[in-house]
Picture 1 (spheres, helix red, strand yellow):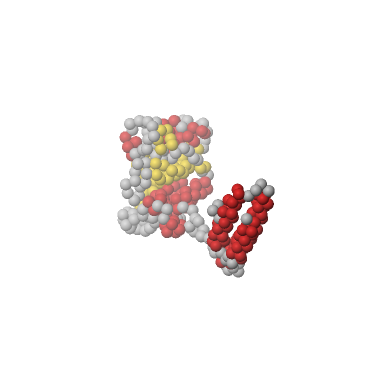
Picture 2 (cartoon, rainbow, N blue to C red):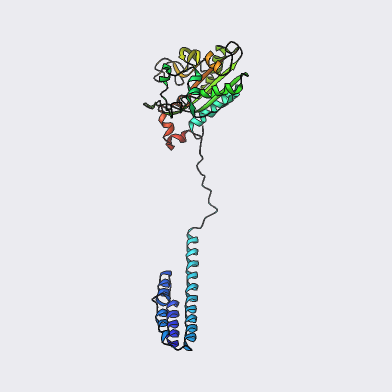
Length: 344
């Protein structure tokens, strides 16, 4: 048996000397050292040996296995080194080549408009306030002079979660919360940017989720002329120094008197075109003097304090500023559309 083991070792080493790839190396390992390999086959005959011969033959078998495994491991390491060197040669980087500039990201156009709005009003002394998007019926409607069953609620088709909890339909509830937090102190001078939700997405100019920026000023001797001057300053900084505004009578439950605010057409400058339907004017926001009931529910005596409020859709401002004709472009994540605003 000793001679057979020595012969097996010599045969295995002879075959290993001519191996040139990892696949063949694996085949030789199985052939000689596997569970059904040649070495295992020889060792099955150890049961016929005497007690004195078994340890001697066992040691020879271990030496044979060790010699074959040592050559296999050496060959395997050599193949791995060669493969690594081959791969590294393919992946060599020419460090003298110029670098590849990664594309720069940019702000979303709605984010840019919100930042512009905040910069303009902060420059006029306003603070930026935030509040919950899931709101109570009281803050969203009742505290804004919209009691239950008020017909004006139909203008804001709402997403109710429970009878008294809903997704806010405007950012005006934050104005009420701000007044209550001030506990009757003045002046109140805040703008409130944020997302709002209404069941209204039937055409290219409406979406069930959109953005608003609303503002409120409360103090003593606040007049409609203050509102007009504020809005005139705003539109000129947003759309250009020659922009004019026009106030038209309107109705909002939380302001009295109320006005719709138009600006001279961004495209034709007031001459008349398809965008403004030949009128020279484009409506951009609603505003008015804060209703006495709203002042009172906010903790202010309407006989001593007055105020004005305004609200605008961010998408509406962005569509006019950038000449976008469909509100859905802002939400489709179309890079060819968004890249136009990357460096503005």
